Image 1 (spheres, rainbow, N blue to C red):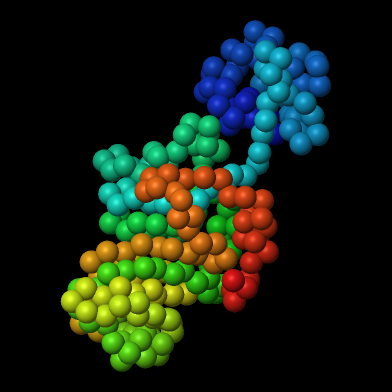
Image 2 (cartoon, rainbow, N blue to C red):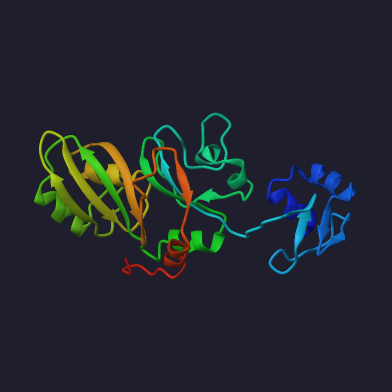
Length: 241
């Protein structure tokens, strides 16, 4: 990796600012001053320092966020606040992106990473990675609804969903349910309930693949995944949870 890209990625400024830092002689690689921004370094094997401070570099970052309502699942937007806007600079410099999307008015588990291969694996339609949601429904949810979801329901565009597991936590004027789906069609949970004549009034994702939402995270908060959680994601195949 080029030394200027490395330093920019870990927060030492823009490429232009990093070039100035290099020119000043403040950067050393294995105790040797480096001024050429095009020099390639291997941060895993070489020691890079700036003003004597060791530069800590990681190729990938993995973050679990409890997404709040009113924020969109995107890296940038000209008009609306994005989940990336909620990140501290020290994490944002790694340019993580959301793995999949949660609707603007949906809360809960959102994974952000810059690991493109992992993201592709989790989002591939062929993998059928389960995602579980907690929801409030505006009318009684019945066992007939649960059976319909197990069979797959037809959405408003004619698409028939794959089998989904509906658990009724309480049924009444406002019902509480958990729903596990293995695909991610646009507004899928809401549209599935619309298919059986009901409406979702509150929606929160509580798990994805092998990971559950850390309930200690307040809305808008996030944390790095533990080594165990990262290993679980990287070795995960559907059905492992």
